[in-house]
Image (cartoon, rainbow, N blue to C red; front, side):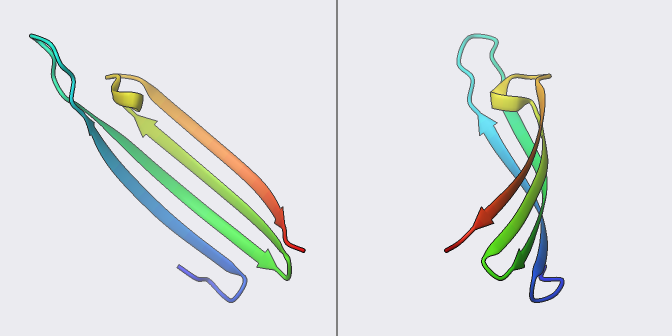
Length: 75
């Protein structure tokens, strides 16, 4: 969603199913939810993202969080 000419925000979700093999193996679905924001001013952009993953990498019960803030300069 573009808030104005300089700022945008977005929400994303992704499901990935891991096919596990073996006699008693069950498939595991990894779910990732993320919120992103970006502010651009001339040649500079500040970007931020926060995400959470459940059943990370197809491992049941494994959770992960990620936060990233970046500054991008274009010349």
